[in-house]
Image 1 (cartoon, one colour):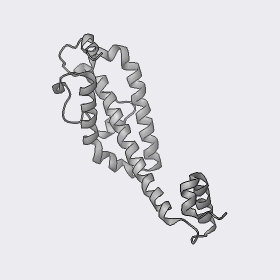
Image 2 (spheres, one colour):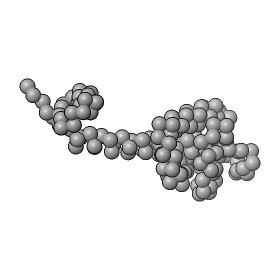
Image 3 (cartoon, rainbow, N blue to C red):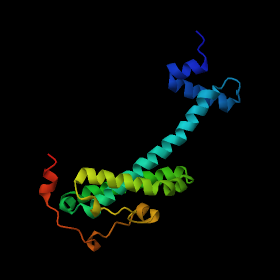
Image 4 (cartoon, helix red, strand yellow):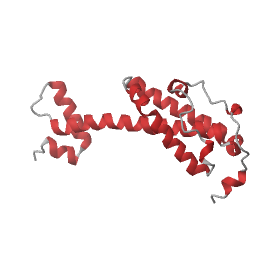
Length: 168
């Protein structure tokens, strides 16, 4: 049975991938399934961008938690700091592989911050006015493994743990 490359793409993706790599290495460009290969390459770029957007949003969300969710900070700050470090490391890994994506991070910073802010408002049920509308730091600070916001310098209204229990 002779399976064509486009059919192989649908029936056995891994075999299609290995065959395509071999064809390219051997210079057998006539046999390459160009349509699906180009689609895969385009998707790869989109996946990296989606991953960066998600990681940056989650990083900002945890920085906001650490800074503004004072009623939960004592109990959760170690976990939040661990997540902050993890998101920064994953972002650094993606940027190491694709340094040109750093400019993309600059493009999406404000949107990711607003997304993180909305997630925090929904999760904490704190008044939206507590969370600044503008990004809390520069991209360089946000990505800096040694930087954390100075929550002691922020004057917040008193929060109680009961406000979190209202969600249950």
